[in-house]
Every structure is written in C-alpha cells, then in structure tokens.
Length: 215
Image: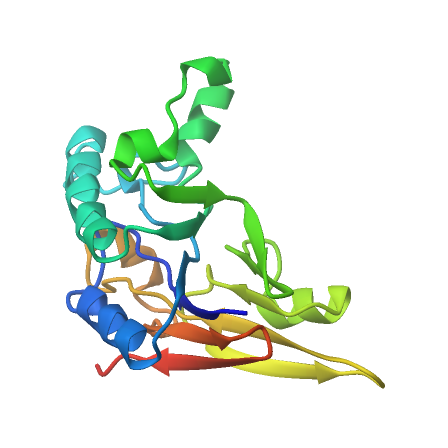
C-alpha cells in the first residue's frame, strides 16, 4: 500500500512559478512514498498541430527551456512514474504523419535527461488507475469501469467524486494542473475557466484528497 503524490500537468517550460516548491511541500507533509506525474510534462507548443504563436520560441529553443525546467523536477523527484499525455505525444504523432519509423524516435527519458523516470500510458497502483485522461473525465471513467481513477488533462478541474455500489465504492479524481495561465502557450484558454492549480494525494488506494496551491 502506498501514499501517492499525483502531480498535475506541467506543460514545461510554461509551468507556474512556485508549483515545484508547492508539490515538494505536499510530498513532505503527507510522507508520500510514490510519485506519479499525470501527463503533459512538456507542452510542445511550437510543434503543435494547432496554431502556434509566431512570436514565441522556436521548437528547438522551447525544447531546450523545457529540458531545463524538467531537470528541476527530476532532481526533486528522481524516482517517479510519468503518464504520457497528449502534448507529450505531439512529436511522435508528427513523425507518424511524416511516415517516420519508430526506430528513429528517441525515448522520452533520453530526450529529457530523466533516465530513472518510468514513462507509461497508464499504471495501476493499489487498485487505482492513473492516466492522463484525454478521452473521458475521471468520474466518467471511474463510473463506467467501476474502478477508481486519477487523471489530469482538464486544467480547470480538481475534485474527488465517489460512486458507490452494494459492495464497493470507487472514486474519480481530477488533480488540477501546474500551468502558467499567463504564458503565450496558454492563450487558447484566456477566456475560459481559470485553471485549478494543485495536485492530489491518494492514500493506500482507499481515499484521495486534492490539495490546491495558494494563488
């Protein structure tokens, strides 16, 4: 059984100032023994399929800044599981579109300098599924599978909702995010809901609590 720290979307290098310090404090406060990054470690704004800011960084410069930012997280949490998010996949998707074989593509850890991080699509810890969650929201996924789920992707949402049956109960948890809403890469959400900046703590697969950062 584990106390898991679930860290929200980082979107490096467009991460909110102070979010790393906040997550480290939560880790110490609850004596977490496992760490899961819930996905979108990097943003890949310049490489996106959507419009990118012509006044922003080039793809190469953005990646350099992202690697530097990720390095701070790696030093803080050298042993961690990383759920691969839709933004993390952008370069692989671009390569697929261009007809480039997988053998040409480097592993995430090789590029980001994080050899002891385990990059996965999803992981089950103590009966709870951790995933990025770009197909369904957490409560929908938990309800349809009757298995507890922790996920990110939906920046404005941080919650735990329970569903109970005659002999079981499961929860769906959205952990929030750690994005800098004022960065040019987040301009698409300028007029949308405010991001919920926070993380989550999951206790032995039985209970879960969102923790919000002071704004």
